[in-house]
Length: 204
Image (cartoon, rainbow, N blue to C red; front, side):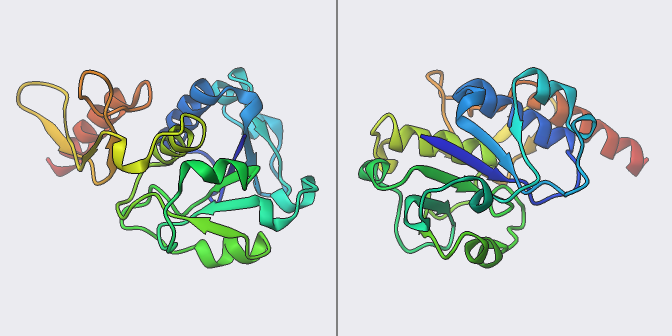
């Protein structure tokens, strides 16, 4: 099963680097493809951390580099009318994620992406926004682990506490680990803390 991220932003923020790095560690680089980067993108523009993890990337659109029909593509869309089901694993070869997940507030760029992909099928992962790594984690659990959506342990809008006095509420839905803690990319907790401290410095 292949997972595709249509990279719909200029450059790579540190948040995105951490998310993509975690996805690569979770899936293996052979199962993830980053598509639609700006045509001028060079290898030197790709963060070294992602390259070291084996990131596959291209400036081409997915439809330019695969031969499967649009009916074998599935776009994860928060506004889809059908929820993703375990049996969808036999219907689709590629699961596609774009600048449609992980934004707060969410931006609706799904229509543009659907047109580019030949009006392929769409599926939903519940009603609440997820970060890209969470959306791919949930898709993997449903499609490859055959776990039903309603059986996945979630936490919504968790308070991420990085010391006894300071915490940040995250405006997304996350999967819980075995210790009932939200699963975050490696290094994300430190980045959240750094961003919070920077905001306080700017305020004063």
